[in-house]
Image 1: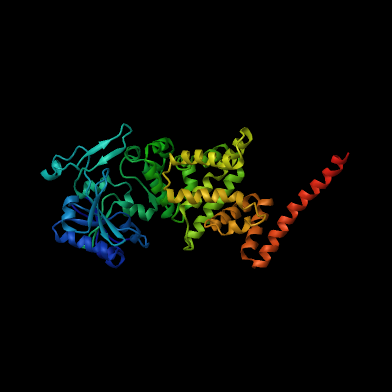
Image 2: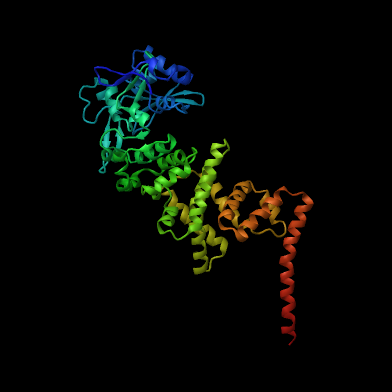
Length: 452
């Protein structure tokens, strides 16, 4: 696929410029600026990981990451627009307006920093720490490019492109795995997953994104090691949620997560329903929402993280509201808010949902009841709500799954929002008339009883 290869004395496979399709025109101007300045400053610098992988696959990378032998502090000296971030992994972000080029210093092996420069040994940031489960809590041991390659997660991400000689350096047979369309961890899978359990999510995400399969040795430990995900901070899990479910592969990722016992560490409520297999409507609904999310993304339409999060919780929320209303003296509205706070708190333990997404979720849920109340001016009030469109779309998807009155309600709102003002008034009056007529009939039936 990529022509002839040769092997250097340092053991990577070296692919000459004539034998690969990575070109500087495929790399962002800002990434090239960083590469050139690091080289000019006397440092090694390479485009690494997904940027190289995606170009080789004929795709357009969204991010361009760089690896170098310069320390974060040395990088900062070269770039006025640099900011250093992270404690667990010390990184340099080179800021070009909204474009950020991430630069990482070559990682070394833990306990093998005796040959490092004195300034690296003395650096307070150059620390390594692991949890009792083997997870890396801090990882700022610096090393050489070959050590860095061994520290990377998957073989297809262990590819380094040099802007100095235009060659690609393949340290883990990543090119072969790209050709074979497989996702394979570097090193012992169990050890690598224990170092960072999020690698289990990444394996699934890369497999669906790149239309590849997970190598059997890489896939085998995942269901057993899935409980390690409980140790991942909820804030980091939100970032993983965005990558898994807002990139056009939500349905495929959801199904693979469920198959590998990982779903409960993102969506505990829908995971419980899937395990019990008692609520077929809930399962059909989430699959419909996932498919709809993928379709919108692939068509270039906007999506919000709040909509899918609202969907995976909805049926559990609805069921608990009914249970609480039946077993207490709370009004339906009080039962709704009490249950919502409880269920949101449970979800927040898995994924730290920012408030800017929590509020739309709550509005979508709250409006499901309001959409059913159309008498008087209520329909007009709901129509003017800023979350009406999201709540309406949510209602339509519920109607597609449940049918019956719910589907009819969705159809009513479809006609109502597009109707003329006169037609809207007639629709509301017609709805009101039925309700008032029932009340009048009830009163008339009671009169004979009172007269007796």
